[in-house]
Structures are given as C-alpha cells and as structure tokens.
Length: 377
Image (cartoon, rainbow, N blue to C red; front, side, top):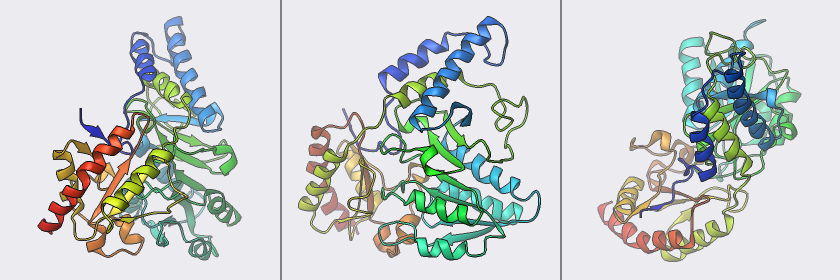
C-alpha cells in the first residue's frame, strides 16, 4: 500500500461518513417538497446542517451548503463585493499575500471584469499577516469592499491572528471573510467567537465526501448570490440541496478535531536529522498540527515529489489546486524567498489514518530522493 502523506489535499472518507452517505442515497425525495418523502430528505439535510453548525460554533441558519470550498470562497468574495457596491463604489479588496488560489483567482477576476482594486498586505518570514500593514490599509476604508484572509496558510501551515484581523476591519466598518478550509478539523474554528461575517469550509478535508462545502454567513451579512433559481438557502444559494452529502458532511463534522502534532513533530525532527540542509517553513510552533513544510536547497520540489512517489510515498509541493504547474510557490515568494529557494519545497501533511510506519517510510525514502534531486539540479 502506498504511504499517503497529502491529507491537506484531501483525506480519506471516514467509514461512518461513507455509511451515512450510502444509506442516505437510498432516501428518495427532494428536501424542498412538502410530502413525506421530501420531508424525510429534509430531515437528513437539516440534521447534517446542524452538525456542521455545531462543529463551527455557528447557528444552523448561518450554514449555507455549497459544492465545496472554492464555491464558498467565490460566493463570499464576489457576493460581498457586489453587495458593497449598491449604495456607492467600494472597489478595494484587502487581502494578504500568499492566499489560496481560490481567493487569488477570484479577486483577479473581479479586478479584470468589475474594476476591483486588489490591495495586498505583506506576510512576514513565517507567513503571518503584517498587522501594521493591514491597519495602514484600513486607515481610510471608505473605498474598501471587504477583507479576506486564510485562517491558516494552506501551504506552510502558519495560523493567522484571526481575532485581531477581524477587530481591525470591523473598527474600519469593513466586513471580513476567512477561508478556513485548511484549518477546519485541525484547530478550533469558532464562527461566533471570531466575529467574522463569512467563513468557508469544505467536507473532503475532514473526512466527508468531495462535492460539498459550506459558507457560514452571519445573519446580518449581505451577499449577492452567484446562482439563481428557487431561492433555497436564504436566497443566497439556489438549487436542489444534496441531502446525502449533507448527512455525510455532518457525520464527519461530528467526529471532532484530529491533532497529529506529536507525529508531525517526530517527522520534522527526522527530516532535519536526515537532511541537515532542509529548512522548516512557517511558524515552528503556531501552525496546523498536521502540517510540515520544508524547502530543500539545490532541489526541485517536483523532482522530489516524483522520486518519493516512485518510492511509494505521496506528498505535495503545495496546494493541490495548482498541482502539475511547475512554478515557484507564490506563498513562499510572499514570505521573502527567492524563486530558486521557493521551487525546492515539499509539503507533508498528516491525517487520521497516518501512522508511525508512514513517517518511517517517508524518512527512509527522503535522503535518496534528495541526493538524486540534488544531482539533477
């Protein structure tokens, strides 16, 4: 069996979630129908919504199901941007460098098609948002549509100062969205405590099925919908709702947090011992418990990935959404690395199924992969 150490890209479906999904597929009925078959489907749907809401310290009415994290992020950013133009122009979108491409590509689309002004806040050397830079950009926020940021960086794992970011934005009268896809299921994510206006998550990152996510949207938050027709889910996201996927999402959400930090720390120590030139990226302490991200000077990350894959170990060079594109990580460039340094990156991520044997296999395969990748240049 291959050793799977790319849980940040997607993690195996939990057996209980798979069972809930397959059982619910046998339930016939549209949740919007008023007959008994429809109402049985609605019960599955709403039980799933309630479980997801509990896992995020939110109210069920605040949970809007989507097709996944990317749609949730698009709905939050585009929807908030459009809603904020209704009384007067507010073209500026404030976001940190190194965001996930679901955010980067969305704001760039708004820049090209809607005249948005993208205002990027620097990161420090550990991938954390520069709060002084953020505050400066909000000193005159009369033209700011929204602030959006990652709860935790999906590549290097650094946790962001969520509460402080929200405080600064709200003090300037600006709504805030956070992409919590990478953080969900690994660290506590409380929508209520954060003060956020909108928050995005995805089921397949926590052991649920691919194809469903959620946008948690505060009761007073205003967004224009991306999808029209039917008005389901508070007129925010129309379309027949996927009750089986929601049921499975709810089961995965109810499984709670998974802390892989002990195994992660063992992996980090093993890498630094086996390859002394390796450099751990991101905050060494205040990071996602399942994330270990390194640069290997003199190596191409893609070469390392292919060599490790040939040895039966699956890892990543960064976000899976950009897989197959041989380019330097924009996250690492935003943290101040040169292009050559940024190209030698590997992201190793652990999940519920990860074991000591997986770590041993990775550490056994790594030195030869690094040596061969170094010779290749």
